[in-house]
Image 1 (tube, rainbow, N blue to C red):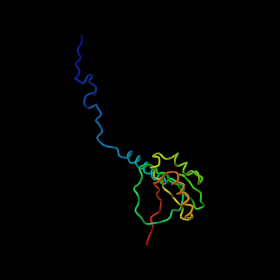
Image 2 (tube, one colour; image 1 turned 45 degrees about the horizontal axis):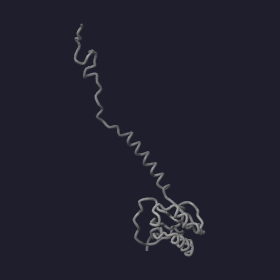
Image 3 (cartoon, rainbow, N blue to C red; image 1 turned 45 degrees about the vertical axis):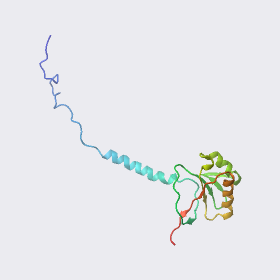
Image 4 (cartoon, one colour; image 1 turned 30 degrees about the horizontal axis):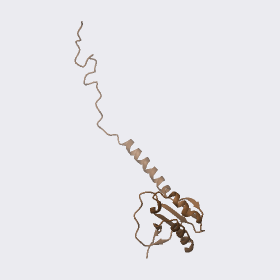
Length: 150
């Protein structure tokens, strides 16, 4: 039946207000800057890798740019030697429409981007476009570089 004589903090020995740690009111910015710099470097390295398709030298022309699609577009690339690719996958000329039908998410309303090397003959690009058109796809667009000068 004893009673404690100590203060309200219980036990005495420096546990009162003086012994408690005060909350830190400063923001340590250094770790946040480190994380941001690492993310910046990662995005700078990854951005060139996001280019889709096969490396091709596009012709230059003037014109108004189409609005960018919300998702990755289907791109058919025609190389200077006549090889055709859907994305980065090589495909035979006669198989283009069948492969596009299998890949297209929106069916025949899917826009198809034709990327032709500027050294490829006009007839080869027209042959590729006729195969795409024969497959039922009607939304065809050419990919060009913007013309410099002139």
